[in-house]
Image 1 (cartoon, rainbow, N blue to C red):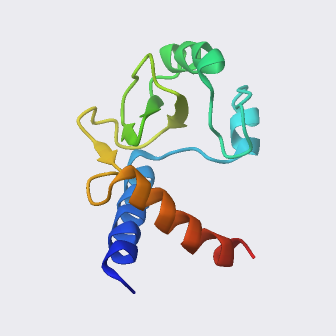
Image 2: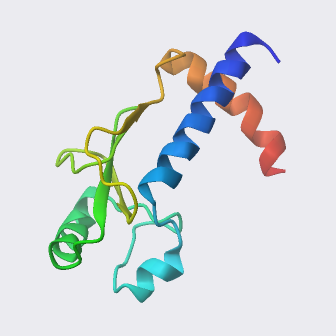
Length: 121
């Protein structure tokens, strides 16, 4: 494994740990059970559906919003983010992951494209 692949793997591991710690809810069925309609099967909400998460979290205090903006994922609401998730774990707003902390955007995408196809197959 070359250095870039190792850095990509470390970043992927860090992102996975982050999502487990914050309690990301990825199950489409679980979100539907909660009365929410995500934008994708992965549990992601687009900006146009952010209001659904905000209304839900205002009533259900045990949940919070995780925001994606650029190559960063924040454990809090970033209103101009490009994607959002519902979470039910650690709600520390200081938690975040920068996916470009080890690689440039081009390196991250290049390595990701070489690693993912064999996994998907």
